[in-house]
Image (cartoon, rainbow, N blue to C red):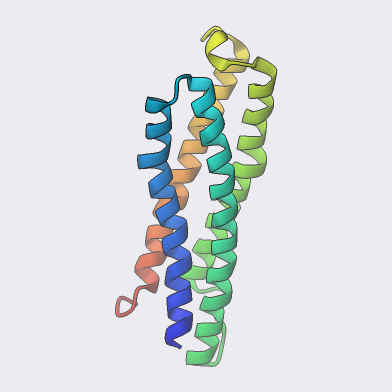
Length: 158
């Protein structure tokens, strides 16, 4: 049982920790040290893509370990337990960010070339900025949900 709890917590820590590191360390750092915003955007885009996949895999690992733990401790997997539903929502938001928002941003970015060379009033840049806002909101939502799941999962807090 302890191993399953460990795997559940590890999956959450990897996912939540990745989001926190990305938002507060990686993105601000690359935009402050790389010579161009375009290059920094490429690093952030690639990193976010990898972070999304880490999140999806972590979510699946969490669900498998959590349902196995529930089955072992109560005789039933409890697929509709709040923590499972929240993780499914986290995965759905992450996939939306990856395949809808980020994909559209990448298409816009490819069509614009260097985004800083595009007028701030250009429709493509305005759309890019709008999508960036949605990307940020989705990541914040996943982080908040992840913290809620961590609270529901931490030993002694249930």
